Length: 232
Image (cartoon, rainbow, N blue to C red; front, side, top):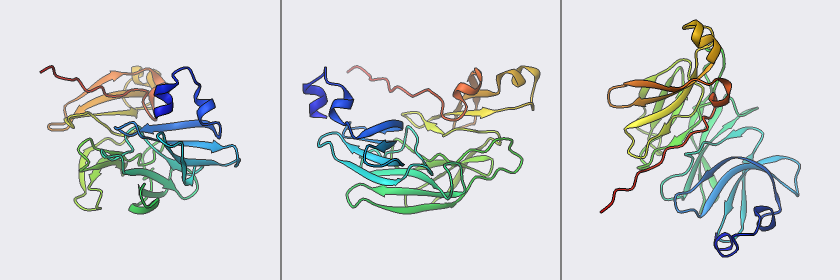
């Protein structure tokens, strides 16, 4: 982290040459750590890694061939990481786990896998941590759910049988961003689009489609929320 600021012209490959082909990256709010799925030069296998930007230390968390992380994978204090670990692949079945970065130990939060019945394409639960730290959202059984990090208080947020993405919380937690696939179900227009991106107001489930440009945004939309800073 300090190196990145003090040497802006240096390439990331110079600072962290051991990391190869990174993907599914997720940054802590304090900019101290990045979670990613990548290979290390010392191993041909993909791993779920946590990179400590202040020291350059890299923690190997889990087998990268079977895990998935989302853009909202960190707790607000950056001390815990939520991820999905499939039994055979990142789609499921499997278990949602929480990593404690201090002890480097992971605990199981929720067992189970993707319920693909009646769904043409399957999606893994894609857990996301809410901005206030109180909830972890995930997709299961044709609906989005939320559960406390303790494993208590499970509740349904809303149903969407064709959902194919993480639920991404807005900074104020009033709205959710997600993608779905209508795949030959609704209209001729839908048949041409395949993938659609929505914003939903969680208080009353008001929903608006904001994009319908096909496969590009189906699984993990290439979108992110920006928090507006209010002037004093």
